[in-house]
Image (cartoon, rainbow, N blue to C red; front, side, top):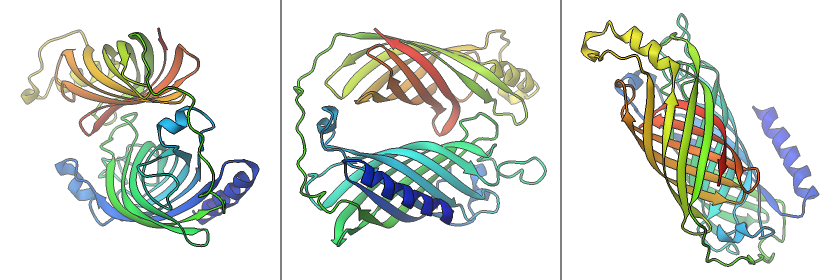
Length: 366
């Protein structure tokens, strides 16, 4: 892990001197608790997770109009190391892309910042039927991970060296690509240092946006096709592809936000496997069916950040052949607009704290 940190440090120096925008490094130590998501998770709680995050951050100054609308956020890359202090869970190595959003005036040396990051993680000790059958959190080495961080940052406390401290939430799971998959959620306190590469970062001028803050747009209609692979809650039942067809309308409220209303059609072959394997369990009381598709209606919100947007949706199955996860579902998606109409997306779907799928797709907004 130390070698990775050194490589990041060297790369950050070279990047910072090759670009006009100023940048800075952060190194944070964290200490926290694993949230108990269900009674089965008690056996996983053997200690308090600790770890380190290191990140490279690049400032924006209004070179693009959207940046002023979000108070000139930073964007960057993070790497993390997490020790769960558990022989069952092992350790987690992760890499993310992230944005830093500022609540305070950017010219101040004292800042309150919210960071959101999404990436991939590697778990050292996933479930194994013979050697580690108690690890119901991770069914595979490779996982997805997100983290959120709310923190205070004091820049240039001693020359270019500053201090940061705050709270962090870290989620990791394989999005049910392979069971088991309860995942882990960690709340932690953080303390660290930041180093500014630019001695003049506090005196640079921010460019105001040339766009009007008033923005209107007619209702737009979206159509998307998504797919991926997953496994049912029954361990070893088999990994199969699934398909999602979505149609929804959205109405922009302003330059940042739009409200959505629409429907999803889910075609999941794993439901048939789950149904057939569960028929022998009397208390489930499944009705006879040969149709395993689900249809949900949802309300959502889309947050536009340049060519990227973040979708959050809450849905309810109006067609629900039998109980699997619950009738209410939530999605969190990341979209990248390829032009004014077409977009690519990645979306996580969950029922409360239990992830069911990670979906990759393309769509059109008309």
